Structure formats: structure tokens, C-alpha cells
Image (cartoon, rainbow, N blue to C red; front, side):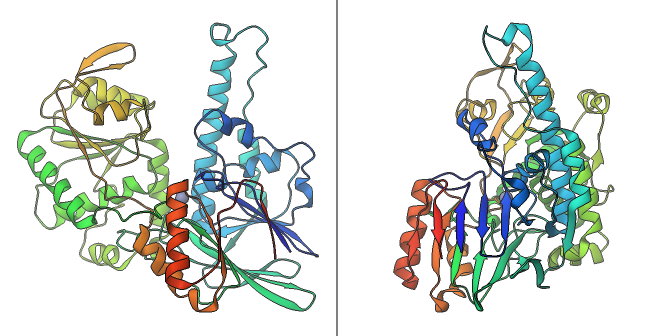
Length: 465
Ligand SMILES: [Zn+2]
């Protein structure tokens, strides 16, 4: 069999996709989109002559765009076979992909306007449209954790919990070719064991070949406990001063986690309850999906729920789905917390909240995610005295605090622990989904600690097995 690595290779984190070809079948594990940078636009296009109709099945590890974002593109080019994933992955992918299609179409329209277009520029086109996202509904095959399912001739797949986002899984393939069976494991993205709300990752115990993520292969995160202490200090201060906490955040996962921590503080009486506004249509949709899959949430969450505090309940957050409701928050006094996108402050509703509140010394901006170079979020972190929003300069009087311990990715120790149960079967490990330093460090540790062979693949490299 052959496995072609068509993303998250060569020191890159996005674009996860693996084409598995046996004598009898071809399947794709993940169909992720490349994100960030100009070159990603080209890489996302289907290569000339690609035959998507020859693929028998697509399997998804989880709903994030960098693992699902090219699926509607396959559909646009005629893919009409099953898509296997857990139910929450399918539900979350649907809202993430619909949002992506909408953003792409808005972006193409903007770029085609006269004032942005240079003579001779090609017409900008979105990769795919909403109709291609909607067609996924015709192809979905929900899977259950731990239940093997035949996804194509000679290929049986099993999903186990990966603890990274709701419904996320690692996948084991048992592939029978010429009466011999081999086991291949795809880690998918793995969550830290301490990540609240979600259940911790589960482990496989045998493999011949492992594709393993290395996002944080070079280090451990700051502990969640320390991060929560810092968060609590800010929350207590704001409760006293009547300020506003603004959190630029991606709508799915991180937002639910932050609401959970605050609900827990309110419930334990550490702070008097104040309003939390979930100012994101996608976040509000995601909360509904969380409510439909409570069985997948961890023990602490279940305990809090049993004690009468139900953090994904609208008793703990106030949804503001429309732009008008979002703007009306400017008229209200704190204390309050507002969660709004975009996560790097390079667009979205967080901008008008920042424009209104950066001049207030009792405002806190809490940065919980990565801020790329030159983004507005990065300027806030770097302590600029003035920042430009909607063409106007704003003096920065608000306090900006960075909290690094809320990551949804396993740090180095948790990655090595996840692999430890596979190590006795001495699989070859293909280290993917990591920048160069990260993947090299993890690869070195896997060799040293477990004596396994590793490969750091380039994009489009083919592993023959
Ligand atoms: Zn992910």
C-alpha cells in the first residue's frame, strides 16, 4: 500500500490530509485546508488531473478547518462517496465549513471590486460555495467511538477519543491486502490531559505505522492551574471595578471552556455572577451542539452539571446573534465578559468592542490564542500606545493580559505519554503537523525514549508500506 501525505508536512501545521491507496481501495484521512500566507491559496487548489471520483471514502478525525476545509472542494469536483466521522465532528464541521464558504465568497467579491483589482488580475473565485458544503449532508455516515466499521474494501476503521475538541478522534485502520493485515494509526490532533470540559484522550496499543501530530513537540504548556489563578485575579478585579473583559477568541472550543471556568467560579461563590456575552453566531450554534452531546463531556463537567450549574446553558451566557444586539453591548456597563471573534483581532465583532473600550483603564483584554506578526492582537500584546481600528487611532489605556495555558493541543509530555502504549509494537512513526523545531524535537525524543524509526515527511511524500 501507499500513503501520500498531502498536507501538514514539510514543517507545516495546516492542510492535514492522507491518501491511503491499497490494491483494492483508496481512502482519504482528513481533507484539511492550508491556512495563512499567500502560498496556501495555491496549495488548496486541486492539482491538475486529480481524480477525486476514485476515492472510496473520506474519514475525518475532527471538525477543525485545517482537517476538513478541502472536503467541499472534493464535492465540487464530483466526490460522491461516504464521509465517516463521529456525529459531533460532522455537526461542527458543517458550521465551520459554512462559515468558511461565506468568508471566501465575501473575500472574492471584495477583491474583484475595481479599486482593489490591478489590470490583468484574474477574477478572484472562492474555492467552493455553500451548496458544496450542504451536499455533505447527503454523504455523512456517523460512527461511534470504539466500534470498528468497514469503510472500503479491506479497510476497517475505529475511532477513539482524542480529547482535542468535541467529537475529536484518533483513527486506527486495519488494512488487509493479499491476506496480510497491517495496522495504521492516525493520532489526529491530541488534546492536553488537563483540558477541562472534554474527556481525556484514549490510547491504542498496537500499530505497524503511526502518523503523529507534533504541534507542541518541543515544549510543555504553562500549567492550567497557574493560568486559572491569573484568570481568577482578573475576574475578581473586574467584578469590583465594574470593567469589561474582552476576549478575542475562536468560537468553538475555547469559548465553551472559558464559560465553563467562569460558571465554576460563580457556582463556588468565588465571584458574584455577572453577564457573559457570547457574541458570535458560530459560537452560539456550537453551544447547541455541545448540549446535544453531553455524554462526551468529562467527569468534572458532569459533576458541575449534577450540582445544578450547567455551563453550556444560557443561564450562564447571553447569546447576541445579531449585529444590532452586538452593538447594543456598547451601551451597557460592566462587570461583564464579552467573547467575540476573530481570535487575532484581524476582523469580526471584537473590533467594535475594542474600539469602544480600549480607552477605558478598567477594561481587560485577555489574549488566549496565538497572535501572528502584524495582527492587531499582536500589537496589543506588544504594548503599542496607540492602535488603529476602522481607520481611527485609539489610545491603549485598557490592560492587556496574555494567558497561555488554555491550549487545546497536547504538550510534549502528553504527546509522549499518548505514544507510550504503542511503543512496544515498534511502529515506524511519521511525524507530521508541526513546525520544523517542534517535529524534530519530538522525533528525536521518540527515537531516544522508545527506539522507534521516525520520518519527517515533505509535502506530497509517499510512504510505501
Ligand atoms: Zn484541530
